[in-house]
Amino acid sequence: MSDRARRSRIGNPLSALGRAIARIPWVMRTGPVVVVLERVIRRLTGGRHGVLDLAGLPSMELTVRGRKSGLPRTVSLLYVPDGPERYLLIGSNWGRPEHPSWSANLAAASDAEIHSGGRRIKVRVRHLSGAEREDAWARAVAYWPGYTMEQRLAGERRFRLFELTPI
Image (cartoon, rainbow, N blue to C red; front, side, top):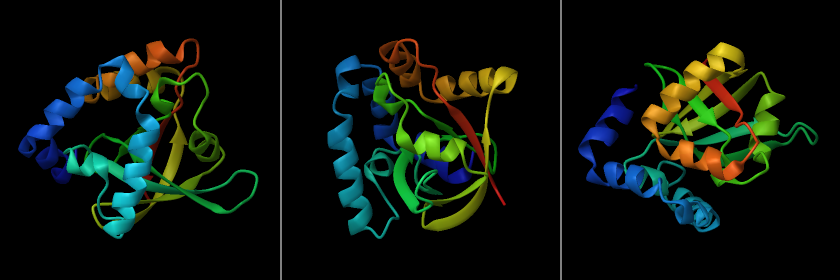
């Protein structure tokens, strides 16, 4: 876990509140509102902060090329810190039955760029499967228990999991 993520998790009481609230099913239905607020706050802060950051949760802007258009696509996401320089992304899509479009773009990419904490970092992308995916899923759920509830809401769809590491 990065020092920044550890500090935000320990030093911000909103982090524990956010984790508790994320276990409530109706909260997942507010996703579209959170996405709009995230965009507004990111624009106002030059991409340095978002709603999740303010709540003491690790978030990033992910930029990846569209698999069909080839154009850069940017989305704000919660991530799971996984070691000093690894990030896990989980395609939960707020527990909806369909995969988020960013995860299809990321699955087709070998690299991307993240913007978090005022830093821009080029990253290598790995779509996890098999035992690696199961191990990463266990770490993700330990960090953000709301993923378990989101998985139940999503039904049969298995979330795509990605590991990002700096290039």
